[in-house]
Image: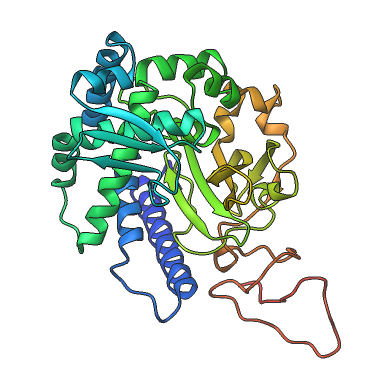
Length: 365
C-alpha cells in the first residue's frame, strides 16, 4: 500500500495521528475533572516550552557568553561585586524563609545559608539571569500571546531557571562533557558543581541546531504521584494530566532513596525507551527542617540508549522491556493487573461467574 498508493498511506497516518491526539485530549479532560479550567496557566506554560523542544537559542548563546565573562572575572560573586552587588549568606529566619532575596536598597543578594553549594550557586546564577538577561527573556516571551498573566509569570521564572542552568553549564562545554562521560549524571555533577536534578534538567535542552545530543524527556513527581515538572526533548507521548503508569520505575525509587534505577520501557504502540530514575531531596537542610522527597526520571529513545553509560552495552533490540502505558485511559493492554481505570473507547464487560486477575475486563474493540 505504501509503495503503490503513497497518498493513501500518508492520509491514513494523518488520520491515526489525529485519532491519537483526540484520545489523549479526552484522557486529559477526564483526568482533570469537571472543575478544571481550559486556560490552565501551568499547562499553557508547558505547551510553550514543548513547542520550543525546551531549547531557546538566543538565551543559550547569551548565557554561554555571560558564563565566559563570569569565569574571566573569577566567578559569579566577584562578577556581581564588580557590578556593585554584594552576596551574603544568611540564616533562613533572617530571610523570612526565603531561599533568595535581593535587597535593592543596599544592593545585596541574600542567599539562605542552609542551601548546599550547588543550590547556592544556582540561586546566584538565577539572580544574574533575572538581571543581566531580563531583556532577552522578555523578548522571548513576546513571541506569543498568553491567556493570563499567571502563564507569563510562570514562564518568566522557568526561563530564568533555564538561563541559570545555561550559565552554570554552558552549552558547548556541557554537551562535549556529556558525550565524553557517556551521560554519567554523577560525573557531570562533580565536573560542573551542580546537582543531579540540575544536570537532568539541562540534558533535556541539548537541542541546538547542528549540535543536538541525545533527546531526553524529564519528569519530576512526589510520592503521591503529583507531577511538578515535565520537560520534553524526546517526543515522549506522556499526557499532560494523569498519574502515569505504576509499572514505570520512577514511581518505585522512593523505596531506595538515592539509588539510580534503570529500565527499558515499551508503550502499547511499540515505541521503546530507556529510563533513568532517582530520588532527589528539596527544601531546607538542618534538624527539624521540612524537606520534600521527589523522584526524577530521564528517558530517551531506545535507539540512543547505547550512548549512555547506564545501558551497560545491552542491545536495545534484545533488551527485556517493561510494558507500560502513558496513562490508564490511553492504555489498551488487556492483561495489566496494575490498571486503575478502564481505557477510553472500550466497553467494560461484566460476568457474575468470572473474576479475572485484572481489575477490569473490556471488549477487544
